[in-house]
Length: 252
Image (tube, rainbow, N blue to C red; front, side, top):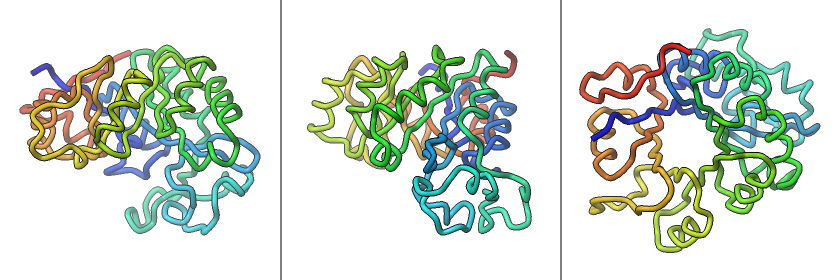
């Protein structure tokens, strides 16, 4: 088997607040060749790094992101108090533009940008994807837009994105038909959705990315199925594994 390429899921989310600049920086410093992060839109259409539609889990503020002005969002701390008590007291929610700047400075690293469905539903495909394409333009050759919305991904190719990744809700025949029609560059799938008796995953023009991977044994098994990209919140730990021998990017 070839060495897997590890994608830092929401940055180095095991040790740092997810989807923050410190988490992304930590993943890049650890040697991650690729980093994935989530994007939501504020009420005034500023794309920021956030997974949930509601700010409660990560900031403690019980507000929906799509109805909150960016000025208010910028005042919030995203230290995930339950996970990191008394740590990261000054960490806030970054804009997409600030995250892209980190990759501009590291020309060998790849960004996987996930657009969340709540923002597409609130502002529409054209507005959200055009905004993302404009901000991601400095690294568009090494930036993959990913998401669950196949139509949005299809449209994104016409709006400037050269690489797309479709996230599967289910691993079934219907999804295979849709994947064949869309022909994405990457297929993302939670490894728990793959049938236990499967010996390989669907062949196609795509590359498989399995996510929620945090153990070396688990990673090796998924590679056997056909996954050469593995997404993990424990990026530093898996990169250090001699057994896994994952690809590293230490210098730009």
